[in-house]
Length: 475
Image (cartoon, rainbow, N blue to C red):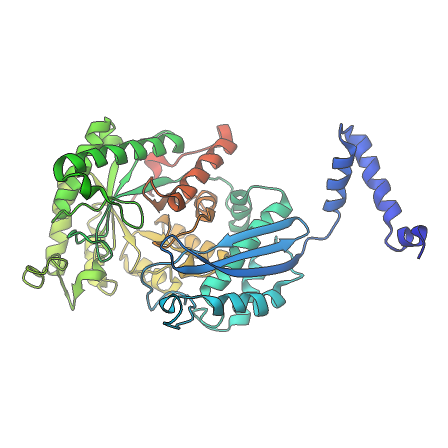
C-alpha cells in the first residue's frame, strides 16, 4: 500500500487539514502540540485495556489496584478495606487460603477483573459511568456483589471515573458532580480522629474514636491547620499527663493513651483545643461503635477491662442518659453508632431528642434498604458513606441522593485499611457531602485525602466554598 493509498483509506488528509486549519485559527505558538491534541480529541473515547494487581493497604493486608487504559492514557485506582465486614454490605472477595496472607489475599478478585470484567468493559465509553457500573452488576448477578467481589468492582469503577474525567478534560470532582446532577461543589468539614479506642486499640477506652470538627474555619486550608495544631497540642497534653509512651497512634492516626473513660478522653481533647485558642470554633464528635460491646440488649462499657468486664452493664436507656449528659458537659456535635446495629428502638429515641447529629454506620452499612428503613423510622439523621460497602461509584451517588432528599447529613468516610488513593476527597466535594472522615492529620494514607482537598480548594479559587457552620442540614 502506498502512502497516498493509506492516507485515502483512513481519510487522514482531511483530518490533518482540519487540524492545521484549527491551529491557524487559534494562532497557537506551538502548532505541533496543538495539532497533536486536536487529533486526539477526534478519536472516539473507549476503554482499551484493564489490568489489576494485588497490593497492600496501610495495615499490610492485601487489597486490589487497577490500571485502566483509554486513548487518553492510564488511570489507576485502589480500594480500601475495613477491619470488620457486616452482613448487610457488599461482599469483599478474599481467597480464604490461611496459608497465604492469613486468608486475606485477593487474587480471586484480581483474576475476576483481568478475565471477566475486562472482557465485558473493553470498548465502552468511560464517560458513561452508570453504563460501566451496571455492566459489572449485570455480570455479577448477585445482590451483594459476591460473585465478582465488591473490591474488584469498585476498583474498576473508580478507575473508569478518573478516565471519564480525563476524557471530558475536567477535574475528577467536576465529572462526579456532573454524574450526580449537582452543580455547586462544597469543601467538607473534616472530622479528624485525635484519640482512638474501641475493639481494635490496645488501650482501655471503650468507644472507637474521639474526633474534632473545625466548623468555625473560613476555608478548608484553615480547617486543616486547626486540626493539625490541635493534634500536636494534644500530643503535648498526653505526654505531660501520661508520659511519652502513651503517644503511640492507632491505625487511623489517633493517639491511643490508656485512659479508662470517655470523659477523660474528652477532657484532654478540650484541654488541647483550649491551648490552640480556637475554643468554640472546634466541635467534638465521637464514634461509639456500640455494636462492639453490646451483649444481647445490654452494653458493657468495661469490655476491655478484664477485672471489670460484665459487672456494670448499661441498658439502652442508660446509654441515652449518658449521651445526654455528655452533650451538656462537652461541645459534642456528632455521635456515630450510639447503639447496636439492630437496636433500632433506642436509636430512634435518641435521635428524636435532637441533641446532635446521629450518624449511622453499622446501623446502615451504606445499604439502600437499611437507609430507607432508617429514614422512614427516623433512626438517625446522617449517613456515613463507605464506598467499599456499596461497590460502585453509581451506587454511592444514589444512596447520597437518598440521604439528601431526607434532609440528612452525609459523611464520606475512609476505612481502617487505606491506600494513597484520594478518590473520596473528590467524591465529598462533588456530592456536597459537607463532611469527610479520613482519620488523623497524620499518616500518609490519611493525608492523601486532606492534601487533595487543599488542591481542590486552590483550583476552585474564589469559587471555593467551605461548609463551615453549614456542615449539616438544620433540623
